[in-house]
Image 1 (cartoon, rainbow, N blue to C red):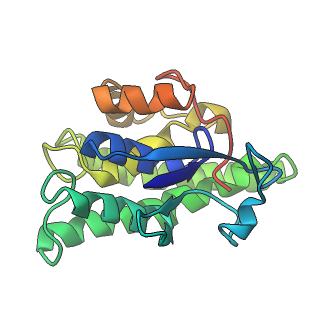
Image 2 (spheres, rainbow, N blue to C red):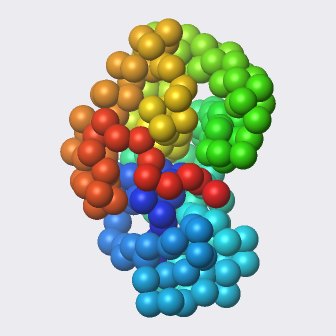
Length: 210
């Protein structure tokens, strides 16, 4: 498999899942500003959407969108990172993936752009605080989103939380989130994934998740 990524972008979630699963893959860095690969290839010719992540399967099939890729990876190692497809527990994971994608990930979008008005950014941070409060309540009762075991939803949430310093989003009102971020960052596979992208455990993303 080949993962098209940008350091620290939302593609980090897929790299974490692949690393946790122990699946072999190669990584191809994308410059999100120029939409070029290291060799000058036009990335939009590979992925017309122009953003990451994109996962190219061994047969050449290409898949995109974080929640889809995370579930694809999980299904390569049944039971390790997500419950069986069709089970109620799997739908709970999908519920979290959808919440993270639509209510947290996309809410953070305006904060990446320097031209976004200050009032708009403050409104986005206020909305994020409401969402974070919901997540923190769940994590106050258990170490990971769906219970005692790390899963694909955790890979996604951790990636978004790692943007907080760069986006000037304050997590200190949510001690459960602060502890969770540190707990996930300490996992060996997560440490390897961060190192592979040139990120320290306490760094935010180096590039926005366009």
